[in-house]
Image (cartoon, rainbow, N blue to C red; front, side):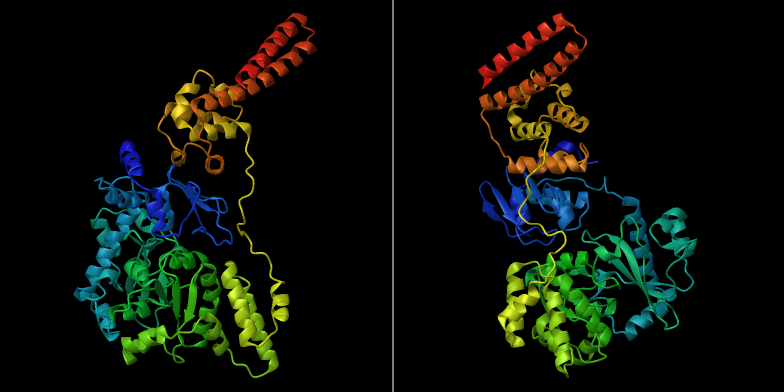
Length: 555
């Protein structure tokens, strides 16, 4: 494992504002920075970054952490890869080969990927190579995709035995099921995550009788279909440079465009676009062109994706292909220049939808308007929402009153984050936040407070951790306390960022201690009265009076 001291050094050398501002537009607010949260849709910004504490936190969705966890969440990196990126930027050399979660599963997939790629180049893979040649796939231009072939005879299991890979491990990554290989007689598309690791496979049967035509790995600890996009690893840098992306439906559509030089492109994994995939696309550009098949199923797929992409804060355009034509067919027939022109001239979703639906009667037009309103009503961004409402007024010659009445029926979006609500925190949690915000004085409280002064077991654990680890920060509580207390502490240290003088800090600690002692003595006096122990009552009352006198001195 990487040494903790080295991890802390990397965090110290990292400016979290510099890291996050590469992906999110931050605005300075006092000593912190604020933005719309990149992890969920919201109207009012509730995502805060504190350069002093080296943390980010969203008061809406409760995601928070340090620069490492931000890269893990935003870029879908694992811990070693996120740490390696920050270390490289800081000029620190580290070894991250150890400590990778599910390392064995990644290694099995990598071996399988190498096997399938090797088979494609051998006599046993001739059928696969012939199929790719028929599809005019240029393997040299597509080498980053590591295409392969699963022969009808199998033999993956035999190869893996030679590599000392157990049958249980093959089953765990979804390469076998009940001892049988999952992929037979299929072109293999390795599915690669944003760290460049193989997380699963897609397979296309090379004969029509092979069903289903497309088959993906089952979900595993390292692979979820709805969280990943095919080709994103290879395309992400081009997407960032162009500030726009192209979304196609299938593997071969993507490969065909890529080898023709159109590289800011990705595809869902054989299923309808998901919310997570839409958010993932939005991180690499502010415009998305949908390039789906020119049949009714392609149009319907585009319509389903529009709402998700708009809510991910991107400008959605839809390129219309000729009927019964897919992107692969089009670029082979008309070339890359023609397709680039088609994409460049693609209308926004509003005009696409208007043109895609045939209007023959007034009722058809009413249905169209209502459908468009339904899509627009999902828009969280108030500026986009207002612009599209005005667009409907103009295009359909409707009065502002009519359109606003319809819009007023919009239901409040679920999970919408408004301004942060007041924090509900106990006195003990408030005290811990004050200690964390004034870490330089933590040594001074050892003679005042002990763990027995805290009723909450969770807070006691946190108190002990902070006292024993003088350099611990709010960004290092994961795994020390549960998620609820970690979130509460992050909210408190950001909203109640009190930097006190040593004198004021100690006064506040003593006041907290006196409050605890007051409660203790009040309880003991009540118990002594119940037992009619007059001597004990007198002693405790005297102690209580001295405590109150001391309180007056410390105020």
